[in-house]
Image 1 (cartoon, rainbow, N blue to C red):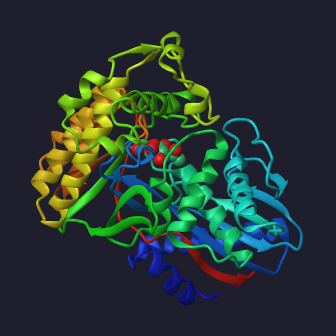
Image 2: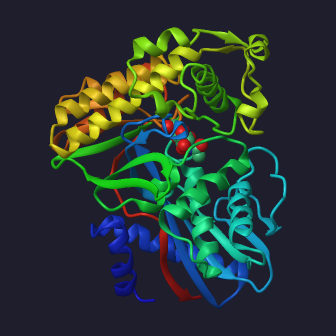
Amino acid sequence: MDDGRWEAILGKVYGDEAPVRDAQVARYRRGLAAFAARYGPGEVAVFRAPGRVNLIGEHTDYHHGYVLPVALDRDVLLFARPRADALVRLANVEAEFPDRAFTIATEVPPRSVGDWANYVQGAAQLLERECGPGLRGMDALIDGAPPEGVPRGAGVSSSSALTVVAAVAIVALNRLALAGAALAECCSRAEWYVGTRGGVMDHFASLLSARGQALFLDCRPTADGYRYRPVPLPAGYAIMVVDSGVRHRNTGPHFNQRVAEGRIGIHLLQARFPGITHLRDVSAFPWEELEPLLPECLHAEDLPALGIDLERLLDGGVRPLGGEYRVRQRCRHVITENQRVQGAVVAMEAGDTITLGRLMDAAHASARDDYAISVPEIEVLVEAARAQPGTVGARLTGAGWGGCIVALVERDAAAVFAEAVAATYHRRTGRVARVFHCVPGPGAGLVCATRV
Ligand code: NG1
């Protein structure tokens, strides 16, 4: 393909700013050359799936609550050629991810925790179960390398982008009639394969986002599917993402500890509100009515007497941390966060950035104090971000325990923000922060088909 054709195709995805588009053209060309070197000449299809940054609505998705994410302009690419058999061969442009191969089947246990191929295998296995038998495999090369790729372990969904791009490729190469919300929902279940009991937010954001918009998603499935709608971002403001460089591993037991604490809360609330299944179901009740029903703290040995079987609560997921279960404050975070997301959508639609910023700040306080998912480095970043003129709100984003913050900043102040926040962070922690202006990009899909 000549330069003009590449520019036309990639300009639609990444925008028409020449340096950005040129870097993407070089990246796609590199990927195609690596694919040809690895698998030989012939047809190749290129798919992409973006990471996401969540503006507000943290740890609400797996409680059937509300979220407001934005797709990043950073993505994972998958170069693929279908095979006649069910074999999937996987290569990665980054040397730290060794080659892998597996045959698509319905019941294969995951490889060791953290193995990168688990995300692709999870997607393949789930699709075989839902749409098989007999799915065809592929020869595939993955490119998720930063800076154009999604930063890993930073709370911006690099793992979900890999799951989604794998699913999108397998669906397309097998001509399966699965798309939109139904595919996003499959991807979220596919990611359970790695053991984390996360929600649907990341996969919906990666698949269904639109350029320049946030996605307001109600994570409760209904008989007609999920309810979601695009919400335009406030004009004149930049979404700034700052990566602390402190890494978390979502597959670890910390995440499932929080899932367990919320589910213990539900179990206890069911005595008073029979029929409820998720924390979402009690969001209309005043907190004063719920608080006395939720103990501040429980220990593992208290659970059997309350009729709680953790193993069953977590559906066979990775064992939680154990120790203390801080039920009351975790539930308070989820319930109040749902109210904040609804308020944020109203504020955004009314162009009321002051209220939006206040809600982001309040969401951060709740995530730090009630959900206890902040770390000192993130506190330094949030404080530095808020000290900048032009910042209307700042908070940690993603699962927590490190990763990124997101700030809404007046566009004219964005360049100074980037410099000042990085300088303060370095001075106070000795660490290097990576700051990027998030230009909300389109959702996942096929980019092009060509020959190498
Ligand atoms: P990240 O930030 O990508 O680790 C995780 C969950 C989300 C959501 C957020 C917290 C997965 C795949 N993702 O995302 O569903 O619960 O934490 O809001 O488990």
